[in-house]
Image 1 (cartoon, rainbow, N blue to C red):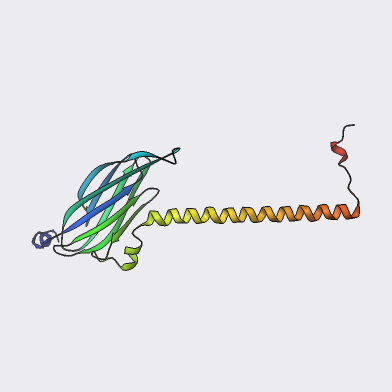
Image 2 (cartoon, rainbow, N blue to C red):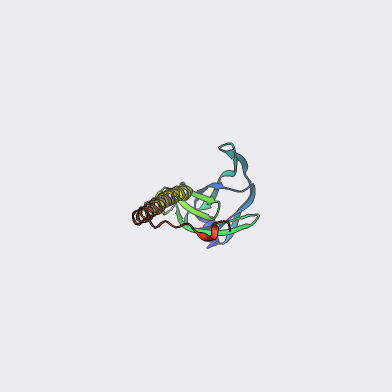
Length: 179
């Protein structure tokens, strides 16, 4: 296969990486052969003036031979070592864009459909947005559940107090009275 790759016209693989690390190393392999390794850095910025968030981006275009290939991305950072792979079809003279998202996990997705990805894969090219939307939805649902429980507890205590007032049997707890 290596001999055949020498005769095929080249295509381009554009890597667009977003990561949450101060420092990391990204290794790109095509069909099992390492074609690129890069040290990545991220910068710390404050969110709402209080919380710190580390973010980094990296864009690089690599030449690949035309045809079907498996692209593997390995991301290594302190406490993080993940590898993911994705298959794509590379056309002569065309650029295929691979979106790499590394944070809590590592995800790969083709942007557009140029590399054999489907429209569904192209629509899911922003997994970080979906993760944040899921967090917001869980927060909203948790708040609704908490408020509902509070209302039920208040109603229960009001009904119990009304029952005790109606029977006139309000007795103090003798264990809490001084002797």
